[in-house]
Length: 354
Image 1 (cartoon, rainbow, N blue to C red):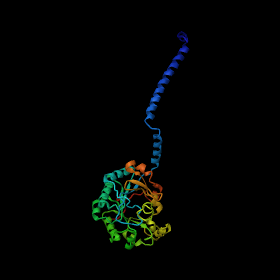
Image 2 (cartoon, rainbow, N blue to C red):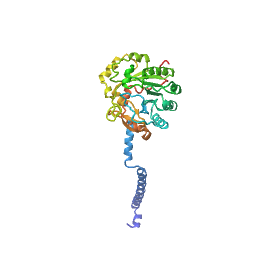
Image 3 (cartoon, rainbow, N blue to C red):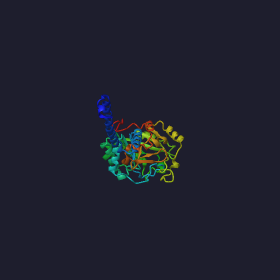
Image 4 (cartoon, one colour):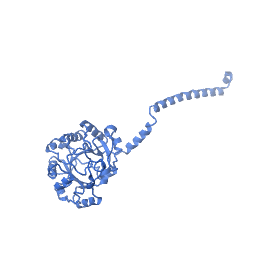
C-alpha cells in the first residue's frame, strides 16, 4: 500500500497507528514479564517451594513444648533393675550449650522444665544442676522448675544455695522396706534410702520446695501397702508408675538392664491402685501414658520417641530447632492433657502451709 493512499484514508491511517502501538506495547510487556519472572523464580530451586510447604504443615501440627523432661545425664549411683534410662553414655552438654537449648525451648512455649537422669545431683556434685535451675528461674523466668532424684546425693547446702529457685523436688522411692529397696537396686551400700527420704522432706518444707514421691510398681513391691507411710510424708503428689520395658534400655540384647522379671500385669497394677485409693495425692501413670504423654529430651537435647517400645531420637534442637525436632518426638498432646499435664505448678500458686 502506498503512503498517499493511506493518507487519503483516515480510517486506514488510524488502524495502522493502533496496530503499531499494539506491537510495541506487546514487545515491551513481554520483556518486563520475562525479566520479572526470572528474578522471582530464578532464585528458588524447583524443590524448595514443595519442601517449604511440607515443613510449614509439619510445624503447624507440631505441639507446644509446655512441659519438658530434660535427662541431661545418664550416669547414676543406683542400680535399679527396671531403669529405662540407663548409663549408655557419660556425655553431658557443656553448661553454655545446655542453657542455649533451654532458651530455645522457652522461646517455643516451654513453661515447665523437669531435670532428671540418671541421677541429676551426681554431675559436679549438684552444682551443674543448680546452675541450670537458677538459669531457668531467674533468666528464663519459667513458672515451674522441678527435679526428679533418688535423693542420695542431696545436701542441705544445695538447698541453701539453689533452693529459692526450685519449685518441686520429686524423690523416687519404691518401697518402705529396706530389704525390698536392696532387691530392686534402689540403694547405695548400707545407707538407708527411707531415712534419707524423711530428711529431704524436712528440707523441702524448710526451704519451701514442694515435695513429691515417685514409685515404680513391680514384682517386688506390688503387694506392699504404702498408705500409712505416704500419708505421714504427705507429698503434694505421689506418682505411681507401672514398670515399663524399653528396648535397648532395660530389655533386649543391647540393654544394660534386664527388667523382664520386674514387669507386672495391668490387673496387678490396678489392684495396687485400688489398695491405695484412700491416698488423696495418688496419681497413677500406666505404661500407655508413659510412652507418649511425656516430652523427653536426652543428654544431646534430642526428643525421644517411645511409641514403638524403644527410644528413637530426633535430631538435636541445637542443630535443627525445637519445631523441627518435636515433630519427630511421638508426643501425644491429647494424652498429655488427659493426664493433667497442662497444669503447671510453682511456688507462686502452691497452696501449702510451710
